[in-house]
Image (cartoon, rainbow, N blue to C red):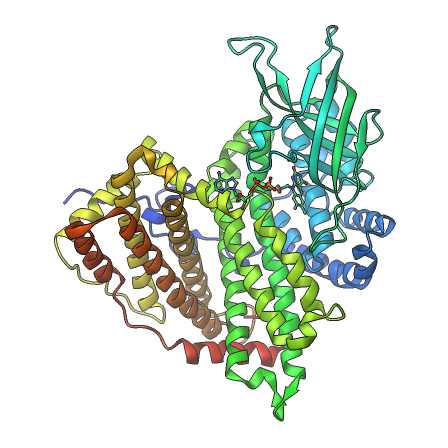
Length: 609
Ligand SMILES: Cc1cc2nc3c(=O)[nH]c(=O)nc-3n(C[C@H](O)[C@H](O)[C@H](O)COP(=O)(O)OP(=O)(O)OC[C@H]3O[C@@H](n4cnc5c(N)ncnc54)[C@H](O)[C@@H]3O)c2cc1C
């Protein structure tokens, strides 16, 4: 048999993006919340206290779009250093690691609208300047953005181009004397527009020289509020995150100095998409924070609410909901911080002044960033839905927090690239990396096919509380490679036209990553013998077991969908036989495990390990 074409994270300190499908990382290779440094724990606490004591109590004012309150909160957040973690020290920032910045996004997410305002400001509103600004632009704007004096916004989408952002119609024309650009067009859905002081605006602009001279390409510009020709339109009336400002922009002969070009002419797509990778993992951790908050409310309500003479938290069907929500938060934390930890590990060896290298390092984790975005946003939607159900009729009225959480959650599946677009990115990126040889996926698929054709292979002999789950994880990876192999053989380079199959493969890939993250986190807690509290080892293991049981069912279902789509007749029958063999396992008793998890949370009165 050929040498196993796998990458193991012990080979290199840096774990290559997307390699989890063909490697077996150990818990020690992965970063989880239990690995937070003392400083990171303190920042988490400071942020959580700020959100609980300063943001949540003024929720009604935020929801009424009281911009003076919002500005005051941004200023207070900046006084605590929360707005400047991604900004270089020389421009008034704290320049901390990405995990710290994720911790802030997670803990500030106790109020949905403020979380979006804050994230847009520190992320898409500020990062383009950190990464692509000239020294003058950084000196001029970053200290103000870090200090909360300026609020940032990012204007890419238009009424006719959201997902297809590169086909934006807004145009920028350089004056003959090359001193100014004049922009004309409109932008839509711009977060923070109503209060922002600085906008990163994307427009088509003619490339001045070289082989593509004259061709119009997306380009980024910095435009200050108050610039003649820039008009902020009316606020949109939204389903959720109502306290956040979302307006269209109109640019009518809006003239800006040529020095406000951000980066190079024609490099706007690069800027837009690189910023989105960071936006995606931050959106994911914020969704985890929102889910933790919603679940905490659900636990407290379930304890207090009596029906049929007892607390509703004692009913099995309510316990099941509480447990599922807790498992969602546990797994969301695991896969999100694992991703950001990998990015930090990669950035550790990059010169912090070399922004191109920083972006390349982050881009290498594009698949994981998209997984974090999609998985966490969908987890949050399930959590807020179940929490509303726990609240019963009270969940449906404004006086109780379940209603707003339910409304606020939904946007996360739409912005920062819709979940459909992110699913296509996940599968597309993996296929591209396989074809280019960047990831040895094709040899791994070939080896798997040789293995399955040779008949059943003995299961790995492993011991410990998660032995069965490790074995399921190995099977899940094989099922995913098997389905992906079958689909790529059937469609070859036409696979991009088979979106349903691409989506099903992305679902399998995401569940594998989530499964592995859950198992490794629980194993790490288990091995250390401690977690963050008494009983955490058993609970972490129980949560991993419940999750793996459900994820395996989803993976099997998705694999069936793919095989049914790509194979016919005898070939289909053979492939379904292989699929059944790969998916075979004895189900865990998830009823008992869920009860154990729910009772642990109810006793604690909150989500905790
Ligand atoms: C509250 C809010 C805040 C926002 N903030 C900002 C902001 O600050 N800055 C900014 O620039 N934009 C912002 N947006 C815009 C947001 O990013 C877009 O709405 C999003 O990218 C989707 O674009 P769209 O609305 O044009 O939908 P479309 O692109 O028209 O998509 C409609 C549907 O078709 C699907 N679809 C589209 N293309 C494909 C495809 N190739 N394959 C399969 N399915 C596809 C989508 O997934 C979606 O389900 C915001 C939007 C909202 C609602």
